[in-house]
Structure formats: C-alpha cells, structure tokens
Image 1 (cartoon, rainbow, N blue to C red):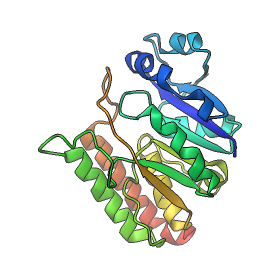
Image 2: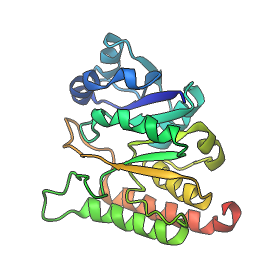
Image 3: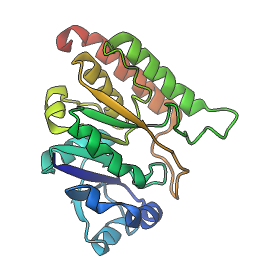
Image 4: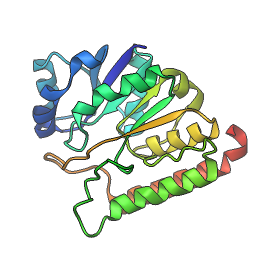
Length: 231
C-alpha cells in the first residue's frame, strides 16, 4: 500500500510554518501540496522545505481533491490542511487501517476519545450542525452496522480504487460529505479513529456558516434524489 500525503493550502503561511515541520514524512511514500493562488509566501515556504507544489487553477476544495487524485502516485491519498485544526501526529494512523482494507479512513472529531475545537465552548453550533448532517446520512444510507461519527471532516484518507467508483463531483466543502454518503450507498468499508482538533492558526476559514450549511443541504437532497441510481 503506497500512500500520498496531500497538503491543501490557500494563503496559510502562518499555519504551514508552524505545522509542516512537524509532519512525519517517513510515514508516507509521497508528499506534495495543492495550492490555490497563495500570495503570502506559502508556495515559497514549501519550496524551502523541498515539498512539490501543484498549482490549482480552479477554486474549491472539491477541485483540489480531484486534481490530487489525478496526479498522486499512491494507492491511497491522505488529505491534510495545515491550519492548526488537524494534528500532524495522526498521519501515521492512516496507513495501518488502509492496509486492513478500509476504503476510507476518517480522523473523527466526534467519537469517544476525540476533541472538537468547540468542545470548550457553551454553544457548539458548528459541531452540532456537523453531527446533524452525519446523523441523517447514517439514517438514510448507512447499512454497515457501524455508525460513522464524522462524515464531514476533511482530514481523511481515500483509496484511489474507492474514489474511481464514488466519482465525487461535489464543490467546495461538500466533497467530503458527498464522498461519505456515496460510500454508504456502495457499502464501502469506513474506519474512524479519534483526533484532537486544535485551534486555527492565522487567517480565516473559507467556510462561512450559513452559505456552507445551505450547500450541505443541497448536497444531501441531491444524493437523496440519486439514491436509486447508485445504490
């Protein structure tokens, strides 16, 4: 099992400086960054670190996933955002599960033993919304007997074999949710392990709450409509 680590960036200079040196490069067979038009020194920093940068011409996280799948040499791709939310120490946890035959492996912020960025807050609106979207996806499509707690998290690994069957065409941040739903439909094997979601380092998240939530609703409805076609 050959693995490729994909680092996803757009103007994340503060994050990459703090996080990239902590990446256990020996845990993967290949590593490169997919960058969408960064102008803050992110690309230059990668070059200093001897990390290849693949320019992303079209915007959107979904586009970054599809571009990476076309270029990567690995049998499975691990998607990682160096913004402080995702723990680089968890990169070593993906390969053993992939080698067990799982199609998708997710670093869960929701399962027992995990920590969500909002867990220290009284109101956990983002967490609750994510859990709600996950709940309905599990109810409608998951027949594996194993509840998947974090259907939306982008810190995940996907095998190329699974990706080719899923053919995700979602835009932006819906790509992970759509992939999880379609994996349920195809009864693929999904594994999770608990992760500790840290605080964001610098910059602002590109996911605005209300517009992103509406896109997730549209994604769900679209997959509901396509149920018979891919089940």
